[in-house]
Length: 305
Image (tube, rainbow, N blue to C red; front, side):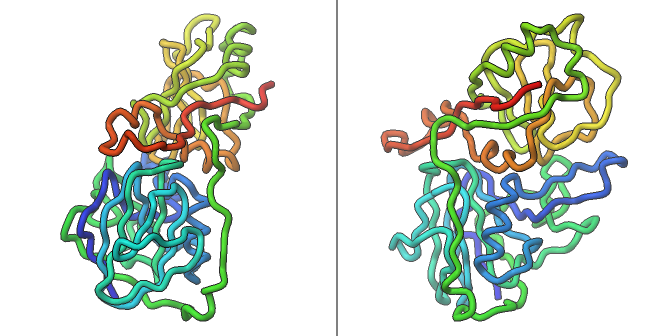
């Protein structure tokens, strides 16, 4: 079984749960940005939750199927269509041999996940099938997918009849993302006014955001004597404050160590909704920007110290 990439969209990569256990050697974790949508997609098609899927960012493309295949679409709503007919998300789909699945521009959210029964059969690299774009390994040749690429699929574990009634909830809607965070390891580097500005402020996701991290724009987090530190480990969701005073939330492809003070760490259970936020500036670059596209582009920190 296989699926052919006819059009790849903006950034389409193979991802799984991530490459754990190698950060001490400088290797990023990578893996699906929205782990909740990733696991839901695998559940819907009857896979183990760790099977590799496709992660599609901002807008999708077109895939052609060489055999009947059970597929699930979760995460951002990119208006999926099979042979130009709209289909549901968050449920199993049986796509027939020769049919095409098309994804458009994200109407709501940022990242869509496509799971295939049997998973994507690419080589394991350090225990993971995830693509590390910066180091160019893992996934499909260590790169984003291109037109003409063919992905081999594994053997399904369950028939369509066994999974066809499965359903999951979609991502949260809204233009404001409420994010819970705990104090970071260098919170004492910041003035009381800086902490209040950070925790009480509303931040916009900028267009300088990617799988490595989200750069935010909003109230300055004032420090006492600068934010340079001796480099230390960076957990998922760490909020670094560089000299500009504007926060950077570090995500799946983050570096393993960093030299800026971390004022907070986003709670892991809120990472999925954070990474479904996209920069409002993206709308100006969309081909169909005239459409009404609901975007989660602003962030509120719900908890502080």
